[in-house]
Length: 396
Ligand code: ADP
Image 1 (tube, rainbow, N blue to C red):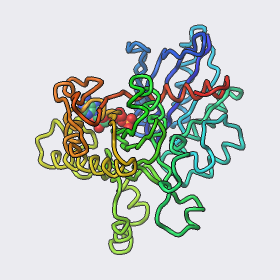
Image 2: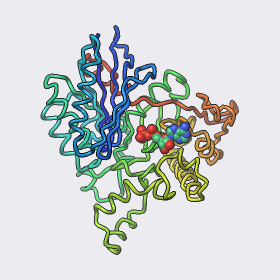
Image 3: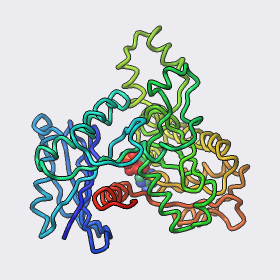
Image 4: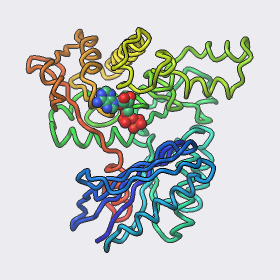
């Protein structure tokens, strides 16, 4: 049987999935897992498609285990667990496709060079994504590798929503709003079209609320606007990222307090968001369980900022017919969902608190002008679908 591997290689984690390819291009998850805490004391867990634990491993000595070595370990594990399967391609999540990469594509040396040039636009993600491609090329030289971009879903949206109000030449140099989480939004747009074609045809705000968080305004399943901009730092408050901030704060910190550009970058990406405001944790579950007033304030701010950005996207859409919650917080945290929805009641959102508490697929009341759904996202599945489309033609 043929199989496809998906990889999402980040700064401190590598997520992977192995999909079997049944007849007629049907994908079935056979294994998936994550190596976390790379650079500290890496640990790995792999589960089968039906959730059984297949492997758990820890590497206590940090210095020995680079991304490169851990990926080699993972491919070794895959190799010994193939049981007659043949891996025909690896699909990668690549954060930035810039202005040129509007669709997933097969990676060769020329493409890799072009993607390399985009590293300054996503310095914390892109280099790790590309390093994984290079590692696989070294380990299995002839294996097809497909890059799937987080920016691509937003590529064809109205040009106006890609602009910052800065001099034209800077826009022309690529300083523009790209938008991210596109693989998740692509998946949600397709699932919504299957589950509820009427809602999918309308004006929908999708809230991807995980460690990274953003919103996407979709009209008829296409991105029209999104809360993230030039980098994955913009928009909502996140686990450790600030989201939108007055750029004057950054100027002040650098000009008046002696913080270096690197200090500011570290503060905005790693010490802000839920962690920065609570002083306790970047993890929503931990904050929910805490009785500290700072934890409550961090959650209040997260909710308010999400509702405020949603209202901005409602203006972009000219009204809202539906809202979809997804990702770790969006799929699981009924309290956060309810509080965001209640702040949007003036848009016609009426939450069914019982359905919401039960994490039901539809959490709005029948009388609600805006239908609210919870849909689990699956970026790995989306990568695998794109990978097949590149290999065998057609659309994903
Ligand atoms: P990533 O961006 O790393 O993929 P996830 O989508 O896994 O992030 O989301 C992680 C966030 O989801 C964390 O803040 C975590 O606390 C939160 N989360 C996960 N499960 C729950 C839950 N049952 N209740 C509340 N929050 C949850």
